[in-house]
Amino acid sequence: MTRPTAPRQRAPLALLVPAGLGLLFLVLPLVGLLARAPWSTLPRRMAEPGVRTALRLSLETATLATVLCVVLGVPLAWLLARVEFPGRRLVRALVTVPLVLPPVVGGVALLLVFGRRGLLGSWLDTAFGVTLPFSTAGVVLAEAFVAMPFLVIAVEGALRGADRRYEEAAATLGAGRWTTFTRVTLPLVAPGVAAGAVLCWARALGEFGATITFAGNYPGRTQTMPLAVYLALESDLRAAIVLSLILLTVSVAILAGLRDRWVGTP
Picture 1 (cartoon, one colour):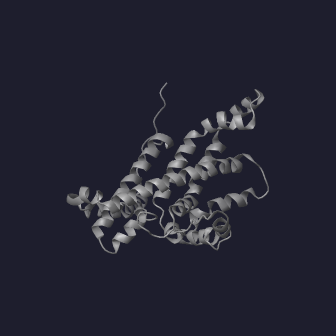
Picture 2 (cartoon, rainbow, N blue to C red):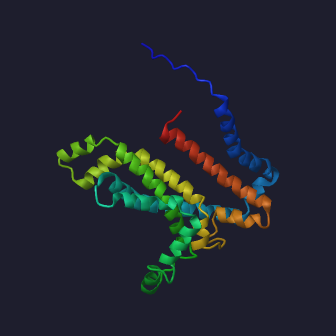
Picture 3 (cartoon, helix red, strand yellow):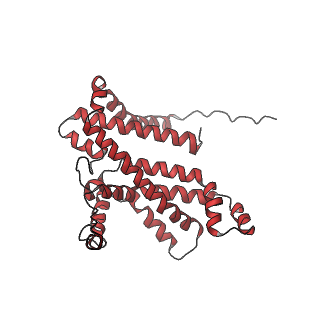
């Protein structure tokens, strides 16, 4: 017996008009970017050394930041989802602070902790000779700081929605906690981890404020694509448009792949 389909609802004009205006508000800037793009010189501009260097650095640092977020964020998400402890709500709130914290403030906070005179930075400098600010490692750290909440939220949601009976069955069969986590829990929440990692990577790729505050804007070392766009705006608008198009293409490709493969919405 086929299930009857729900009748289509006609959108009321009072909702249709603001919805259309909202769509225009979001789409028109992208249309303007595409309309002003120097299509005739686009291949030549994309092959320029400065563009390739900024793109390579962005891809490398975003990938390293995502790896760092996965290594630290997945256990943190498991802790928030599966362990009851005093102050868990406060910890969850602190984890999500970078989502609402202005990125520049995040960069200042990183300087106060990891700078040469910071809480940990002075010890790293004297004990190991490691200086994180204004270095490529500083870019990775800044990107991981602002991107990790996306991973933690996605993985925690996946853990809360996973069927715990499989974990309980593994425990009754004699599997230890680590074996259960690696062989049962992680495969169950793998789509959530993948989605969170992709969102984390995309956020790291577009990071600007914390990066320029904590790592600076040095070509070939800390100048990622967003920083290159900011610098190009002061001298060459067309170059800024080309760099923006690259970031736009990557972002659209990531969101399209995330929707079709992991989210599964129509």
